[in-house]
Image (cartoon, rainbow, N blue to C red; front, side, top):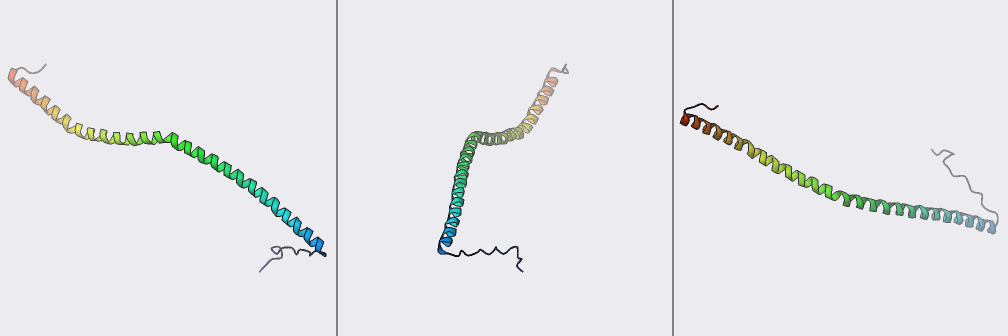
Length: 114
């Protein structure tokens, strides 16, 4: 159901043609003012958007090197993990060779190491 408050107030119709034209001209003037205000607001929003876009582009260009650095570091850590994976068995082989060499020298010289 429609409430009486939601209905627009009835507009009194002007009595003469001149009054009707004056009312139409006043309404057109109100519309022109609103359109001019809307144009000013739109121009302000466009200027703000252009400023924001240029700031975003500057930020992107400033952080491009950081992103590239982190990508390179990610690759470096992969290589270091591979080196670490290879270092474990190599260390075991070097330790085995040192123990074997020490045992060989002990047997050859007949004296225990100091």
